Length: 297
Image 1 (cartoon, one colour):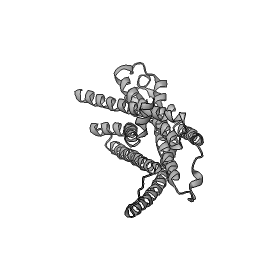
Image 2 (cartoon, rainbow, N blue to C red; image 1 turned 90 degrees about the vertical axis):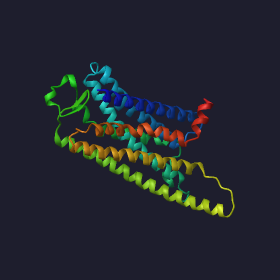
Image 3 (cartoon, rainbow, N blue to C red; image 1 turned 180 degrees about the vertical axis):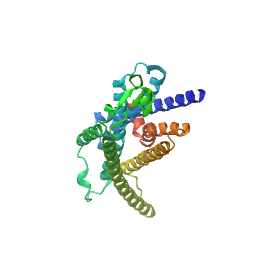
Image 4 (spheres, helix red, strand yellow; image 1 turned 45 degrees about the horizontal axis):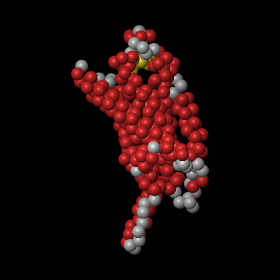
């Protein structure tokens, strides 16, 4: 009992810090609306917003409901929370992939054949973000039909629980269709992410060689802001991939162990929201403009 209470307390503290970090990033990037906002900054605003949804639906709301609101939750509340959580998961990988591509195109040479893909302004990104919302909403549209609140079900008929919300058995054909769509979406987006990150690594290597040449000729040279931003995006992408794949492996382990390992269950819960917690602090650490914008406000 004490161990579970300690685990839940640590989980809530980490989730709370993640929410504060994402709101801080969101507010600071919003201050760029007073001037010319870059496409990457608008994508980072959307990523922070998506991370906040993830933390609220899978973190704070879930834990509070266990201690306080479990009797106030109903089937509609379960449907909304779990549906938003699944949509936010898809938006996270979609936004990270878009961020990687836009940053790769931004630092590409003007003679590059990929240069035409660069958005003319931040507002040209909005249709893509809107498309991601529609896409991920459709891929997760089967969930609301199979989610019930614990009080509305016979416990003997429950196939999988989520503390206060349960998944009823669903049609296997429909289930595998939507699983296939999720796997296809993740595979395509991660393939695009791999191409864009590989291209960025190539450009950063060329930039590094150029810097070494200038240093040997005793010329002064400063790293362009675009190159620093590319390094930050690569770090953010590696962070996402770390949490994504470790979460996948933990899920497989729990599936074959029938979810009996309490330590693995706790680790799986943290890995599910780990990127949403860590990513804003990576951005704060890497982007020096946060302090300037904060004091200006």
